[in-house]
Length: 195
Image 1 (cartoon, rainbow, N blue to C red):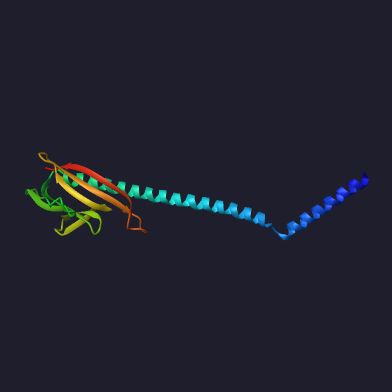
Image 2 (image 1 turned 180 degrees about the vertical axis):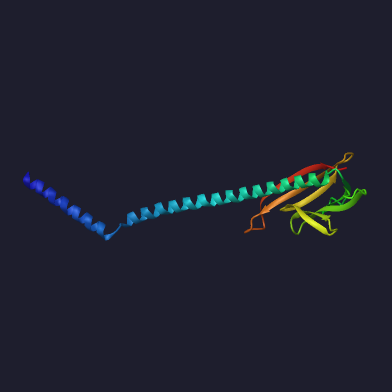
């Protein structure tokens, strides 16, 4: 029995010594393959999550930008066309993309001598993808302000037998890295009362 116990202890020491020697030489091929597989799975997961997160960020930015531009257009059209002293002078052919709207503003003079007339125009600039309002400033020079950007189409139309003007604008948001295909397209319709 004593001999058997000594043999078992000797065998265990030999196995332990071989195990320690094998560990000091490095990792086995199987251990390397397992480590490589686990690290590949972790890297792929991180890449997938960051790619999806980047797409969501771009889509959110596009949505917020177009919502802001649509709000600016609605607010500006309501203010410019529905003012108390604004009259509608004319609309260019609404079948063309470069539709424009001409307004006549009757402004009471500051010296009390009556009313001054000023003409302003709202039009679409396709080359700059924006809607512009041109008007005469106090120094009688032509000034312009941008009503909305990221616009890809604009159309004006008079609503028959009413004193309302409708407008239909298409907004497109393009990524700066790939400007050939828009990330998001939105359509905005509205109507304003003119006098």
